[in-house]
Amino acid sequence: MNQRGKLVKSWLLGYVDAWDQFWFTPRLPHTLSILRIITGVMLLYSHLVLATDLSAFLGETAWVNNETARQLHDGTFGISDYGRTYLWFISSPALLWLHHGFTMVVTACFALGILTRITSPLAWFLQLMYLHRLTGTLFGFDQIMTYMAMYLMLAPSGSCYSVDAWLRKRFASTDRGRFWNWLFPEAKATVLANIATRLLQLHLCVIYLFGGISKARGQTWWDGTAVWYSVSNYEYQSLDMTWLSGYPRLFSAMTHVTLFWEIFYCALVWPRLTRPFVITLAVLVHAGIALALGMITFGIMMIAANMIFISPGWVQHLVVSLRRPS
Image (cartoon, rainbow, N blue to C red; front, side, top):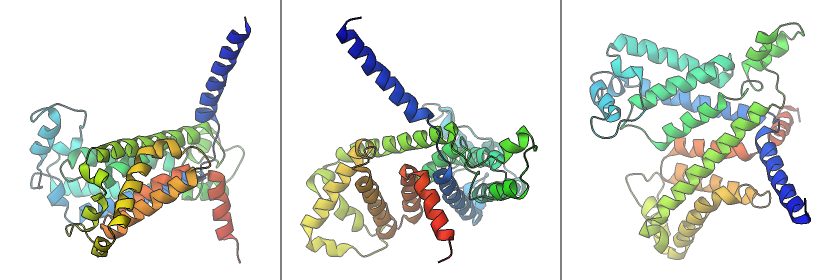
């Protein structure tokens, strides 16, 4: 093999090695465990909101009844998709309440880390069933919770900061058996934790990229008025931000920085040099949306999603520091 061939081979092997390290380097589960708590709490909150007027969301007397909800997915009004759910076929109010109560118990267990190996996929599945039934009443908040729960169920997210971790420590034994070790996993670095982390990171990059591209198609994001139109909209306004009208350069700069950040998030979030700035902007943007536009739950979930780029070692160190008496 000539010198050029050796260089090409070395270059290719380097990329293969980098790909292997990206996906299959064991990672600690501590960041995922914090995200499990946040996602579980927000899922429970969502189900509690539905419980305030369950018949308006589910059943034959709902705003969108069972038959209409089914037709929105089966091709009656367009292209058929795979958004199927058994909730289309439940009309009994008693059965719906029983199902909803079970869902809230499962979600609470997921948040607390109780039998997480079982409750995490169950919480995701139940959320997906609600998502397919509640077509027409969904927001970005609902989709974000669902994909977060989906990736968290792939990893041992209940191995720390959970009741499972307490049970493992309380009844620790070397001869408990394979099932015990699977049901109550040790908080150690695993490949599954890394795969779940990478999938969530990439999914977040795709969301921002297409969100930015979508914004770039609108004229107001180019002429610098998009932020002004958002904060001055009384339908969403929770804080009076109309004072920005006196500072057109300020809201124009905010508009262009937001657009640039969202489009290039997928590239700038990976290098260690630019990551802190990208994550800080994410927190500022979503905190602004939460406080100024009244989308508090959406803002919280997006800030939480960005935590996936925080090192689990740093999370572990922070939690230990907080627990240490001053």
